[in-house]
Image (cartoon, rainbow, N blue to C red; front, side, top):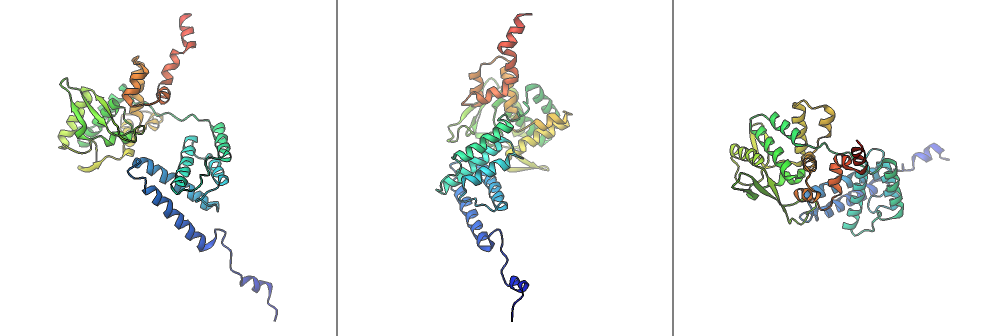
Length: 334
């Protein structure tokens, strides 16, 4: 008896484009491998760096699954396609960071890196030429804006913490991760009412050599008021607060930007300005104020722990343009 074509087709197993259960098992194995590899980095790298690698490679792995490509090991063609696809929604700096995460995971697993190839370099150059390398700059929390936000803080426990957070963040020029890692035991009070605090680790100081940061009498007064009311003698300077309950752990770095934005909104700042505030705004604003006061670049770099002048110049460029040769030419001709 002849079998109809329809019946014959029905006896054939359906092909799963993704490769079926075998492919799913491979994905699970690869996922376990790279996450285990990242876990080996703990202690050698900051928690923020590891978190960034994990988030970026997760995005790459998800994209590979959607495109039916292998994430581990990835080919140069796959990474190049990923770079071009990501450029549609991500900033060039974000694309570069995700590319770095792919390279790092491959190195940790002792796999040939698919990133350092001409194909990936060409895709990256295409992204930068289309969008440019310039990044949006965070709004600088200059002294005028700093004082406005401090005055907006209420007199309760949370308000006292936020006043101290803003004042210390401005004086120390700390990045958000550095700010929340500051410890009470590293605080020194001077006889003139000012102080200093040790910034143990930073983005540019992964080995933890540390740097001493200056605290004005004003910032120190806000800080001592907060520590006194909160009855804190040891541990992190800045803690989370839930209702009226003080948390034992350090404030999360992401909370810094939220605090600034909430206060700026309450202070009546324009929505466009509020949107530009970030966890680095105090660092940016302090650098801008020092430049406006005529303080030399070397002293600004020392205050903020910068190893290179490039980022400082980005922060103060709108001020420096007024000192350019063309600006001086027109000023001299008046």
